[in-house]
Image 1 (cartoon, one colour):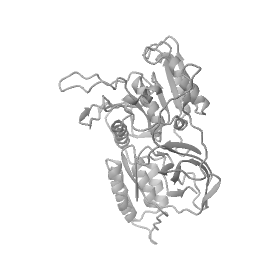
Image 2: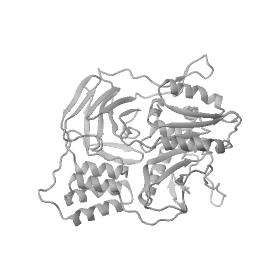
Image 3: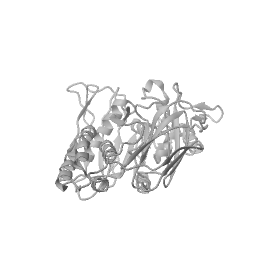
Image 4: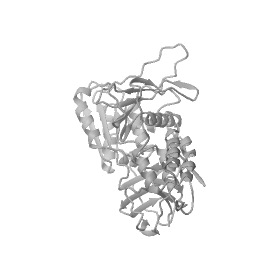
Length: 443
């Protein structure tokens, strides 16, 4: 077995051939499957849900039946609206995270979720008795649930502990409120905007869009910032990006961000960038920006199974997955393809420099899916896993995988109830379901 950590959750992926479990010849009692699924839905965390997978498998539910149940999802009841406190403790810091739930919330509909990252994360956590700056929705929007995580020094958005905290909070909300997985997006102001860039480059699977406001990618390049690992601008291609900066911003003026936006665009990253020439480091632009911001979101619901993915990482214990692609093992191969890096920019129009310094070897996978066929290019990767969804794969036909021009796999792949449930437990997502894992060794 090999272990993959992603966003704080422990993912156990079996190596070698796929394990296939066949349902018993006779149909199981419906009540046994219903009871097992009810226990699965009532789990309070991904790890607890994963522990309950075996009970569903033992109940003998057929693949199509379990898939149908997972797509419908858990039953939701009435929940509190207004301000909902979601306290957590991270690195011995009490974090007073909160969610804002619209008064008109009803579980009969699926609701968008905005994860909004605040600025000023370098401040020391307040001591007992000190006044804490309230968390509030600084930019009003359409009816949606808004999550406000808290961060302080040592738990900044780009540190492991903050990443884990955010995903834990999103998971908790998804278990209580009927959240539309296609419309979960990440935004933030100032340091929060910089944090949005971090997630887009490092951990993008959950997000429909990433919306950095008054942020600056160069902050993440400063070694003193304490970023968790190394960053790869090319990964931005996976998260639709809409950024806003002010021309008179005293901290991150638009002119200093412009060379990086140019680098992104030349590197093939689709980015929408809006500059308000007279704006300072504030949100005075919001009345004018709001319609554009909300239109961008409406045009970019999350695609659960994109036809193209590209992901680069320097580690395989976390930050090694984007949706249906998992990077399992790094290392050079004779057939490596020279995939271009997106890292060099010109801060003054003359000298060209690297944005992010890197000390460790990394690996990258670019994959295109056409029906049951995968055309993959790799650099610095020895093995990866393709997660196969019955929504886009025809399991009655063979799957073909070509890596760097050479056939790496060709043959049938069987659907597996345990695999389906295990990934459903980890992702807690009705739209992103996988019926099989295909482990591929790079030729």
